[in-house]
Image (cartoon, rainbow, N blue to C red; front, side, top):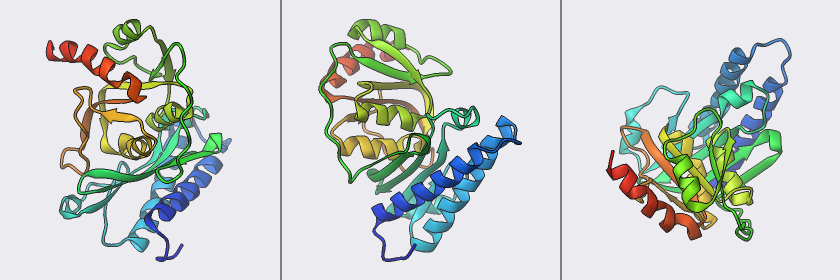
Length: 250
C-alpha cells in the first residue's frame, strides 16, 4: 500500500488483508478455540495498526487490541478499529464475525468499512446498496449469548420476531442487507464495537442512536457506549417512544 491511497481505499485494503489472515487462522486444525480467537485478534490488529501508522502517521488510533493512547483526544482525525468483532463466533468457526475499520472527524463517524470475510461480503460508507422493502413482520437482531433487557417487551410492542446473531457488525449489516429491520442492544459496548457499523449504516439511510435518541459521539476518553439502536427509519420513533418511559423508570 502507498500513501497515495484515499482513506476509504486504505480502509478497504486493510479490512481485506485482516480478513484474509483471519480466514487462514480460523481454518487451523491444531489450535483450541480460545487460542484461535487470541491468535486472530493479535494477527489482524498487527496488520491494521502497522498499515495505519505507515500510511496515516498523524492520525489518532483507537483499537480494542491496543493500549489506549490518549493523544488521540487531541486529534481531529481518528481511526476506530475492531480487528475481530465477534471473537466467540470466530473461535466457534461460525461466519457471523467481522472486521471493523471506522473513522471519525471531531467525534463524528464519517467513514467506515465492515468486512464479513467468511461470508465473502464487505460493506462500506462509499458503496451504497438500495434498501429492500419493509417486511410485514419486523425482525429484531439481538445478542446470541444474552438477550438484552426489554427485548421481549419491544418485540411484543412491534409484533416483531427476535433473531439472535453474533458480531455487532454482522447484525448491523444484516439490517442493511434486509435480513432484519432493527438491531437493538443494551448492556454496553465500546466505541470499536459500533463506530464502523454506524458509519456504514448512516450512509445507507438507517437510523443510528443511543436508546434515548441521542447521537453517539466518538473518540471520547471513556469509550464505553451503554446502548445502541440501528434500524430502518420507519421504526425509529415508535421504538424510542416505547423505550423512553422504561429507561426513565430505572
